[in-house]
Each structure stands twice: as structure tokens, then as C-alpha cells.
Figure: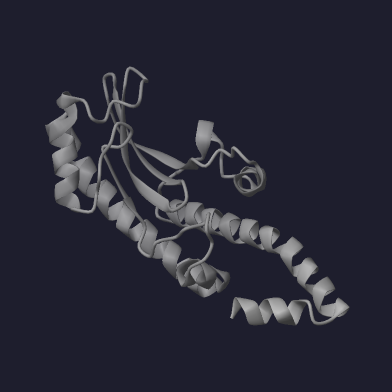
Length: 198
């Protein structure tokens, strides 16, 4: 199919010109779809009473942040939205939804304002509890538990039906709603146990 498309593009000067216009607009279309995803996601969380914020307490993820994701050779591929779900003395637990290539979400922990400590032995009980909430949660130094969204959304490769379908506003809103519902369910379950665990 790619060969057929290539041959069609080079068959006339008009086709070649049209293809260049489409190619130049494609990146802007990717930025717009990802921007709409974050915008609807934030709105849906707020509709459910959760004040989720961008990095450094910014209100939202900006068009420029997403543009940088696609245009900079060493882009900041980690950005997202955050919500503080628990604080006790010097311990803070956050829920975050973030992008690398795929969208993923889960729980992080800080002690005395320092992150990157999720694998510390003192937090084993909370890691195990998160795994009981959903066995798909994985942990590492930065995350007590993280998992990919369902459906899997790869905004870097931008090559799956799941991402293409986001161009349909109804599909986008349903997908966002499902992510928010699943997130809130996990947040509430964990919040109910954190006082006992920490």
C-alpha cells in the first residue's frame, strides 16, 4: 500500500504539491489531538471534583509543551497532570497521569519533598497494596505503581487505531471518561487505606 501511495504522489505535480501540504499539516494535527486529549482529561477530572494540575502547579498542559514533544530532538517526553491524594507529616502521595511514548498513570511518593524513593523498603506495604488494587500496576524507583491506559495510547508513534480514533470527538470523550473513572476508583481505594499503611 505504501508503494501505491508513493507512486500516486509522484504521478503528477499536483499530487506532489498536495502531499507536501498534507505532510506539513500532519504534525499540527498530532499536536491538536494530543492537546484535546489533555484538555478533556483535565475537564473530566474537574467535573468529578478533582483539581488536577500540570507540572509546577500550572493549570494545564500547554500547546507549546506538546509542540516541543514533537519538534525538539531532545524533547521533554515526560509531562502530565498531578493530584495530591495524601499527606501525613513529611510523606506525600500523588496520583499522576503522564506521557512518555504511551500515556500511563499511577502513584508516586515523596519524603521531605524528595521523590525517586518508591522502591525504598519502608514503602513495600503500599506497593503491595497498589498491586492488589490492580495486578497490572508495576513499580520502579519513581512510581509506587504505574500502568498504561486502556486502550493503549502511543502519541509518539501515532500509528494505531486507538490514537487515530481520537479524531472522533465522541470516541475521545468516551476514552477520557473511562480513564478518569478507572483513575478515581483506584485513587479512592488507595486513599481509604493510606492512613493505615503509612
